[in-house]
Length: 469
Image (cartoon, rainbow, N blue to C red; front, side, top):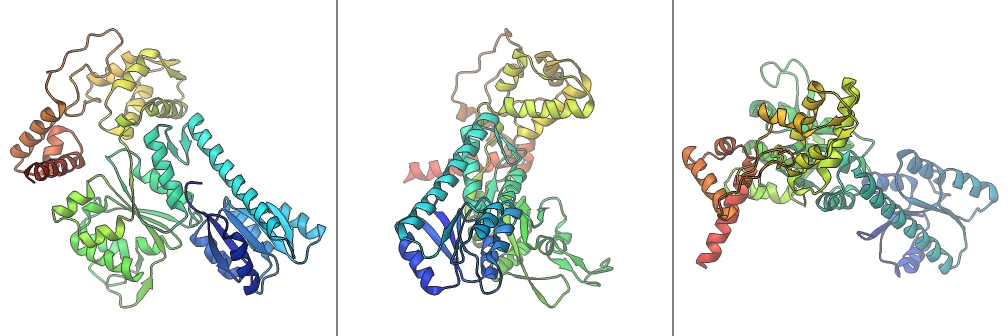
């Protein structure tokens, strides 16, 4: 188990609940109590337990309704039905509705422990099977990749999906941050609720407050009617604040107030409304560097940066380029009615060697162009070289000099024998000097992501302070 297993104890008798705690304290598990069916359903909306001990005779409903809810929502929980009204008919009905096992009261402590241990072992084996499926097919929800950096991401997703903790997803543009957020939503208890994504950098700051909180009729010029904001639209689900570091500071203060109080007010309104959404954040910048630069509030950073999740760039995902390339090739070939089935060996080598500064988004564009302008059974390196000639490929700054997407047998030019970090630092400093210290403009000049410059500057500051100490 990657974390403490969670057991939901649905039992209306306080004395039996105490016995459960006494019997199960030998196991390294987290116990969650629910003495009514309503509280059990509320707990299932907030967390996904590994095992549920379910009494069928509850004061407000039959436990079978809870069992059917778990099955309907597809929650990966092993349900052990516990009842004093044991009969073959009840047992058969419970097993038909998805129960893992059936225990009749009264029962011996060893019987309960063995049953719970077996259920936990089952969940562990299911996780191993899922991990083997990732290794074999390279798929996790809608994410594709079997490399070690991506498996670390999958571990974070699995560990955090069950809770309401805010996950702060960072990474270069095109690395799949929104897909990561969607995977967290899909595996969470809120999967049946809406997934709402707001790009904080794409909406003018004058409209961003209305987009987040909504507005009432007449709140401002053009507000012809009342409109729900993103927080309200995400009720019962998940809200992704994409490019959170682009948010205006005045709005950052209001967002912090929502996170602290759990309430928000529409623009022009007077009545507070309850915020019932799980917040996820994403950025292609270095968030702490933004805090140090005074562009992002430190108190908001600590409120949001609960669980960090770094999406690795494609150049660091050994072997994943092939998995992604084959996936996109099959997808686009089907869309365009082309006959492509795979890549020639020289094309595979070219794909592996290229730096992919635009990450997965660049790979998608490259392969869509290949499928649009060529046909055949195999994609060859010559087809990729044609794209290079049209400017579709650009190596990252500081990468060793070499022909991009080189065909096998082409000579490799020898780079200047200087430390790579020196070349990179000189290039970044020169670009910043030319752009008057403007990081986004310098990044555009160097054709890299601004977060790379922020990250490097932070590293240099740390090295300078360490050397002067």
